Image (spheres, rainbow, N blue to C red):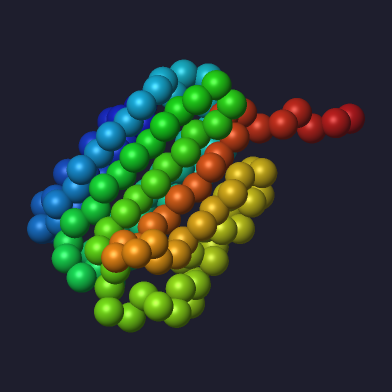
Length: 130
């Protein structure tokens, strides 16, 4: 399944639970390695679960951009009442480790009135040296 299919599947699942989700995907997942695809899936799942649990309103926007060398995902939602402590959740810490393990970058932090989860993932993993 392509990333658009996966994003739509997440959207349908969370919409069925009463959440409103806007999805925008730019680019083509062809040539994106399996590990970045899996980590992207994990980022989407954890971020949307956190929106369902903590956001002020059950709404999120997902933006995924696929470029020649990287995949960027950004999930935004209304800032919840107790989001000021930032990285207290084990799920976010686990995501940060998974993203770093494939040489990506991860941020989860407030930005004005929104909570933003963003990850930059490599399109392909670096070749292991012999």
